[in-house]
Length: 122
Image 1 (cartoon, rainbow, N blue to C red):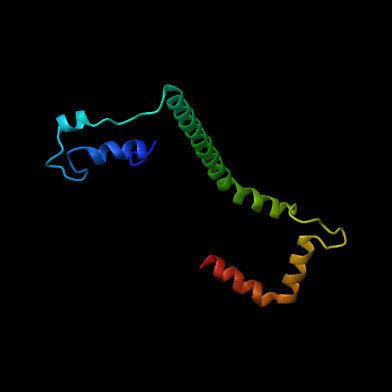
Image 2: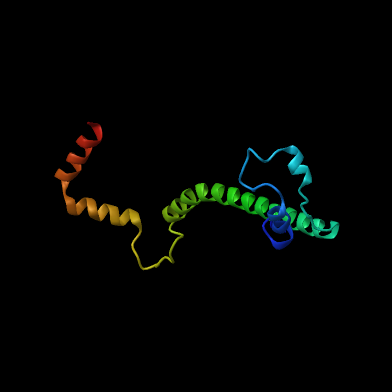
Protein backbone atom coordinates (compact mmCIF):
# COMPACT_ATOMS: atom_id res chain seq x y z
CA UNK A 1 0.00 0.00 0.00
CA UNK A 2 1.67 3.29 -1.04
CA UNK A 3 2.47 5.64 1.83
CA UNK A 4 0.65 8.57 0.23
CA UNK A 5 -2.53 6.60 -0.44
CA UNK A 6 -5.70 7.72 1.32
CA UNK A 7 -5.21 5.21 4.15
CA UNK A 8 -1.59 6.23 4.79
CA UNK A 9 -1.57 9.86 3.70
CA UNK A 10 -4.50 11.10 5.79
CA UNK A 11 -2.96 10.28 9.20
CA UNK A 12 0.26 12.01 8.12
CA UNK A 13 -1.66 15.13 7.06
CA UNK A 14 -3.50 15.25 10.40
CA UNK A 15 -0.30 14.91 12.42
CA UNK A 16 1.25 17.96 14.09
CA UNK A 17 4.38 17.98 11.96
CA UNK A 18 5.06 18.56 8.31
CA UNK A 19 6.41 15.57 6.42
CA UNK A 20 9.49 17.27 4.99
CA UNK A 21 10.56 19.23 8.10
CA UNK A 22 13.34 17.29 9.77
CA UNK A 23 13.82 19.62 12.80
CA UNK A 24 10.26 18.86 13.93
CA UNK A 25 10.52 15.17 13.16
CA UNK A 26 11.95 13.06 15.94
CA UNK A 27 11.58 9.58 17.39
CA UNK A 28 8.66 10.36 19.66
CA UNK A 29 6.67 11.94 16.83
CA UNK A 30 7.54 9.00 14.62
CA UNK A 31 6.20 6.66 17.30
CA UNK A 32 2.91 8.60 17.29
CA UNK A 33 2.45 8.17 13.56
CA UNK A 34 0.19 5.27 12.71
CA UNK A 35 1.17 3.61 9.45
CA UNK A 36 -1.31 0.98 8.32
CA UNK A 37 0.10 -2.22 6.93
CA UNK A 38 -1.58 -4.96 4.96
CA UNK A 39 -2.94 -8.13 6.45
CA UNK A 40 -0.70 -11.17 6.86
CA UNK A 41 -2.35 -12.68 3.78
CA UNK A 42 -1.52 -9.56 1.74
CA UNK A 43 2.03 -9.55 3.09
CA UNK A 44 2.46 -13.19 2.09
CA UNK A 45 1.17 -12.47 -1.42
CA UNK A 46 3.59 -9.57 -1.79
CA UNK A 47 6.44 -11.69 -0.45
CA UNK A 48 5.62 -14.54 -2.86
CA UNK A 49 5.43 -12.10 -5.77
CA UNK A 50 8.80 -10.57 -4.90
CA UNK A 51 10.42 -14.00 -4.43
CA UNK A 52 9.01 -15.12 -7.77
CA UNK A 53 10.34 -11.98 -9.46
CA UNK A 54 13.81 -12.51 -7.97
CA UNK A 55 13.76 -16.13 -9.13
CA UNK A 56 12.96 -14.96 -12.68
CA UNK A 57 15.78 -12.39 -12.49
CA UNK A 58 18.23 -15.08 -11.32
CA UNK A 59 17.13 -17.42 -14.12
CA UNK A 60 17.52 -14.70 -16.74
CA UNK A 61 20.95 -13.75 -15.38
CA UNK A 62 22.06 -17.39 -15.65
CA UNK A 63 20.72 -17.62 -19.21
CA UNK A 64 22.55 -14.40 -20.13
CA UNK A 65 25.80 -15.78 -18.71
CA UNK A 66 25.37 -19.00 -20.69
CA UNK A 67 24.62 -17.03 -23.86
CA UNK A 68 27.76 -14.90 -23.42
CA UNK A 69 29.85 -18.07 -23.13
CA UNK A 70 28.27 -19.51 -26.28
CA UNK A 71 28.87 -16.32 -28.26
CA UNK A 72 32.60 -16.67 -27.62
CA UNK A 73 32.58 -20.11 -29.23
CA UNK A 74 30.25 -19.11 -32.05
CA UNK A 75 32.89 -17.23 -34.06
CA UNK A 76 35.24 -20.19 -33.91
CA UNK A 77 32.49 -22.62 -34.90
CA UNK A 78 31.39 -20.51 -37.88
CA UNK A 79 34.96 -20.15 -39.14
CA UNK A 80 35.58 -23.88 -38.77
CA UNK A 81 32.41 -24.68 -40.72
CA UNK A 82 33.36 -22.16 -43.40
CA UNK A 83 36.78 -23.77 -43.91
CA UNK A 84 35.17 -27.19 -44.11
CA UNK A 85 32.64 -25.87 -46.65
CA UNK A 86 29.65 -26.65 -44.44
CA UNK A 87 27.97 -23.23 -44.42
CA UNK A 88 26.34 -23.52 -47.84
CA UNK A 89 25.40 -26.51 -49.98
CA UNK A 90 28.34 -27.58 -52.13
CA UNK A 91 28.04 -27.89 -55.89
CA UNK A 92 29.81 -31.07 -57.06
CA UNK A 93 30.40 -29.39 -60.44
CA UNK A 94 32.69 -26.77 -58.84
CA UNK A 95 36.41 -27.38 -59.14
CA UNK A 96 38.30 -28.23 -55.93
CA UNK A 97 40.04 -25.36 -54.14
CA UNK A 98 43.49 -26.81 -54.85
CA UNK A 99 42.79 -26.73 -58.62
CA UNK A 100 41.50 -23.15 -58.35
CA UNK A 101 44.61 -22.05 -56.44
CA UNK A 102 46.91 -23.68 -59.03
CA UNK A 103 45.03 -21.93 -61.84
CA UNK A 104 45.33 -18.56 -60.07
CA UNK A 105 49.08 -19.06 -59.60
CA UNK A 106 49.52 -19.86 -63.29
CA UNK A 107 47.49 -16.79 -64.30
CA UNK A 108 49.60 -14.49 -62.12
CA UNK A 109 52.83 -15.78 -63.57
CA UNK A 110 56.26 -16.46 -62.03
CA UNK A 111 57.04 -12.79 -61.10
CA UNK A 112 54.08 -12.51 -58.75
CA UNK A 113 55.16 -15.65 -56.93
CA UNK A 114 58.69 -14.26 -56.38
CA UNK A 115 57.34 -10.99 -54.98
CA UNK A 116 55.10 -12.93 -52.60
CA UNK A 117 58.06 -14.94 -51.30
CA UNK A 118 60.10 -11.78 -50.67
CA UNK A 119 57.24 -10.16 -48.75
CA UNK A 120 56.80 -13.30 -46.67
CA UNK A 121 60.52 -13.32 -45.75
CA UNK A 122 60.85 -9.56 -45.10
